[in-house]
Image (cartoon, rainbow, N blue to C red):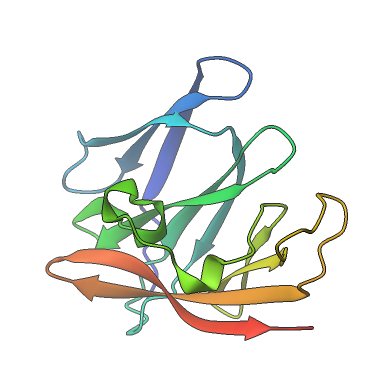
Amino acid sequence: MFNFDQSFEIKEVNKGTCISDNHISGIGFANNSRIIKVESADPLEAFLVADIDSDSDGFEELYILTRSVGSGSYGKIIGITSNKGKSFKQIYIPEYDNSLNLNFEYLIGYQGHDSIYVKNEKLYRQFLVFKNGNSANNPTGGIRKLEYRLIEYNGSFTLQVDVKENLS
């Protein structure tokens, strides 16, 4: 059961050629006046919609993809989820939380140039793996594919890597 009476409006405010602020507002939600602000973000690249939470609650999430400018072209995900159609909130993504001071094992060798996509109601990230000493043009660590899942945690939602697969 999907609710087609709800949508999101995204306004990108460019602060230069490689940085912008994003303002995300919901349309058709009971809490209509809320605006999620993501400041000093990379430029917008694409938008994906999928219902990837474990119980497939019928409310699709919005995944906003940004891409850094420059040699790395690092992809980043901004996730927005519906709270049973009544309100919406930003999805917490631990790998972007600098306050954690953690090195995520599944990102070892990641140097950007990734693709982020949805297939069969699952969210994936795929990238070339760089080993120590690899040049920017010669990654030798193969290809890694990550599958994310959305889980509810303490009244919020978090995007977690569920499966890590080395493809070559």
